[in-house]
Length: 411
Ligand SMILES: *[C@@H]1O[C@H](CO)[C@@H](O)[C@H](O)[C@H]1NC(C)=O
Ligand SMILES: *[C@@H]1O[C@H](CO)[C@@H](O)[C@H](O)[C@H]1NC(C)=O
Ligand SMILES: *[C@@H]1O[C@H](CO)[C@@H](O)[C@H](O)[C@H]1NC(C)=O
Ligand SMILES: CC(=O)N[C@H]1CO[C@H](CO)[C@@H](O)[C@@H]1O
View (tube, protein in one colour):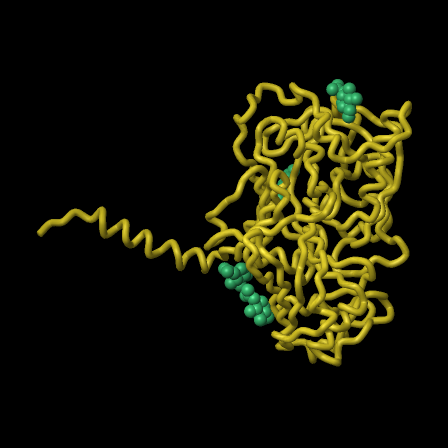
């Protein structure tokens, strides 16, 4: 979920906390200001990577991946989408009557909760699921606070956060209580973990629903989850995660407009992919003339469901590795169909939404790769996922070999 006012929000937060100085503070200062002693009983460099199991929010198509953090003293479980498209932590509190998710976080039951005075709204440029954002329909009203945040048994004290006190109905479908921003600058609980000695990176294994076992690994890379090497590319966003792309190819073909360089945002909280209208239509033209704008949902496209199955729609996004060699991230044809429109179930929605001013990919790309989000080195790493069948194929010969070696020779 790309937050459209991320940087504005942080400027506002900084200005109101230090009300004597009207000068907005840059967001990176937040992590450096993390006080020493924020962790009780944990020595620097004593931390090992923290594994957070993720559930897939699946409605006929994979939408978003979410897992638990704990907030408060004693800790209350709060399920959040780990969202690389935003930078703050916000979740529904008992104060939010428009929030349908339960159980909500109850500030009164946390002895460490400190209520702030500032309320603000957060707009999202990409929302929940596959529907386009129309007329600011994804807006949260939030209040600032601080509290202890515990992830994988490690507690970070005095973490800045927001409690949701009102939300627009478009969020009602969420199976989770909130959003944990995982932007390209360390902040919140993540900055506190890094300060305590955890490597400044996290890895995502966002698997399709049928595969399961999705996970977020904070401060490490699980190389049993992929085969081969990670390919790294420079991260060029300031807050977002962005990588420069040299061309887009659809079914092996490209056009002059698709061959342009563009900076593509990687957003784990968005399921579809979004490009400007001209790029979107150039891509669809290489798939099928039957794909047309769906007027009831501006920005969405579709075609009759009986024409979508088997339609080739392989999208190759080409990037340049840190070694200077090109590599592709590939979206297979199976991602094209994101399901029938509610208002006309004979028309199936297609993967690409038009959104002028944004080039952004989400879960439909990330779930085909193991991804490393390396804040310390400002780079992103990708490796093809190791699905269970792929792993079984590689593991078995090793086990057989070991058996041969261990078997006593009785001749
Ligand atoms: C989150 O915690 C709840 C219990 O509070 C549990 O039912 C749920 O399975 C957990 N979710 C994940 C993804 O671990
Ligand atoms: C919590 O952090 C804020 C800055 O975000 C700081 O002003 C405050 O003193 C801290 N409180 C404690 C108890 O450490
Ligand atoms: C990337 O994909 C395009 C289109 O399928 C292909 O022509 C090109 O060889 C691929 N590049 C690499 C490095 O695999
Ligand atoms: C390289 C690799 O193993 N890719 C797999 C990623 O996961 C999908 C979904 O299970 C498989 O179809 C791919 O083969």
